[in-house]
Image 1 (cartoon, rainbow, N blue to C red):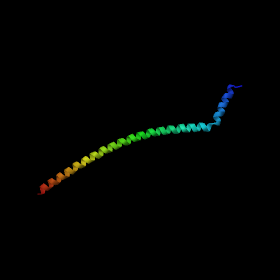
Image 2: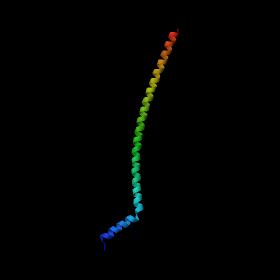
Image 3: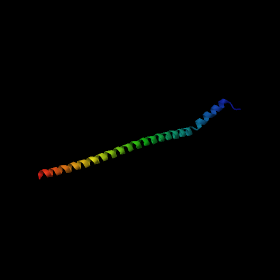
Image 4: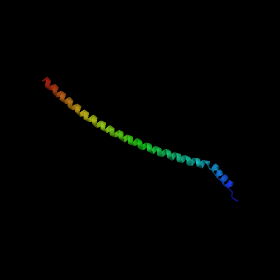
Length: 86
C-alpha cells in the first residue's frame, strides 16, 4: 500500500542520490546565462567601436582639410616673400 510518507521519502532519496545531476543542470543553466550576458556585452562593445571609428574618420577628414589649408597658406607666404624680396 502507498502512503504519503513513503512518497516524500522516495522523493528525498531520489534528490539525495542524484545531487550530481542537479548540480550539473544548475551549472549548465548558469553557464548559459553568463554566455547570454557576454553576448550583450559584445554587442555594446561593437556599437562603441563603430562610433569611435566614425569619430576617427571625421577627425581624419578634418585634419586633412586643415593640412590643405596650411599648405595653401604656406604657398601664399612663399609667394609674398618672393614678391617682397624682388
